[in-house]
Image (cartoon, rainbow, N blue to C red; front, side, top):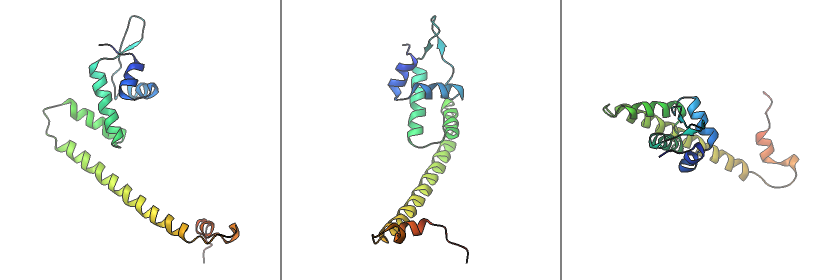
Length: 134
């Protein structure tokens, strides 16, 4: 089976520009070329790009995707390193959730302090404005 870059993109819901970028940064190998000099992808590239897309959908940054790909290429390795990467990523996700929860709480308080009226009396504007050093 040979897929064009457009077909590969459609099969994995990935933009063509993104596929080319992944090739430039060596997440995807440079594809073979047809006699007409078109990129030709096979099952291996389809599987690898699907892996990359799923990892990115889970929020893994590119450096961790690269590490996960490297680990997945050596099927005999112990999965402790994969587990550690996933745990580190989960901790980062939980940190971001905590930060967003605090942000939501603070923003709700600011909005809750609004009493209407004019902008000159607006509690939201007041909360955002810099306060002079005392």
